[in-house]
Length: 358
Image 1 (tube, rainbow, N blue to C red):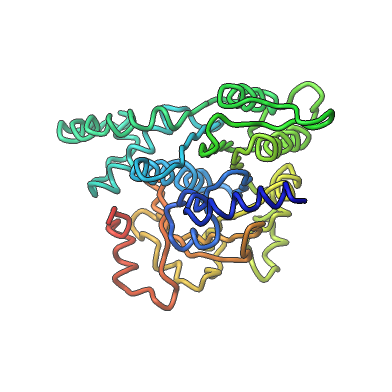
Image 2 (tube, rainbow, N blue to C red):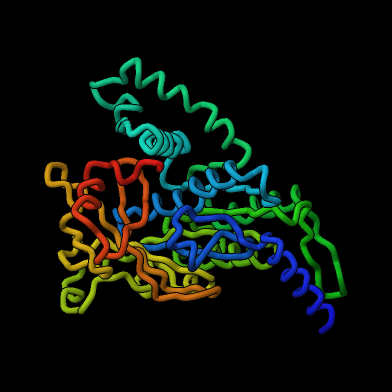
């Protein structure tokens, strides 16, 4: 037991030096309950169209990168993020991130279809010059964030994990039956984001989608437990939430039982969060905010979402947070408590100024 106690003492001492604080999610209220650290498996789920991918991008790619880049000279923490984007191409993802960054910094909304030339209305010279000014931002991101787009199977993801681990550490045998992974840099936090699990391909020996997803979750567990990485998995809900039978329930809030194609990812995870759009189901907001006041009557855009922490192995769960969601840029920020919301807050969310970088 003394060896275990010595290891514990080492972690406690690191905590005293502030080395175990982890990386901020970029949302102070949420940081009270969870943060980005090594060896944490996170699951994010919700129904289609709620902004799951945008939330995962904000919390586990863009906000952490911004935090790291700002603090890189004042922290021992190193950061690597790999994004398995099985739904969108790397060019599309980068374009969405650019639209978000320009709006947050400049207050100028360049719609993604306009940026990409999908509309008859093209970029103005000023907009094109603004676009080019953000090249250094993405150049800085290049060594930290890697996007792997296109479909793959569980073994494809696990092969990437093993190859990456081999480049960044080594496996040592400590007894006849045990071996450990020794990273080259113990301060490196590696986030592996897989979006989303229902797009994982079947492979030999895995004849059903459920078997493939369960195998994926098993590999993500190994990435956490053996290599010390921090996987994040995005999951769809099944369509039963729109079934008339649910109309009779007291709430339409997502539950882990409704995760599409698999149940093991919830059990395997350390943290599980869901997103909910109550307006979609014509019900009230779980956080008691007036979600109807956060609908743009001209465009129909809905700016309210509820985030719920269903599971938290490292702290409190059954926590709900009201969120403002700007779908055009894919960005989330926290709302004040419902009884602290002013009309000015509602108005600034609808006109976009609420989201600007302070």
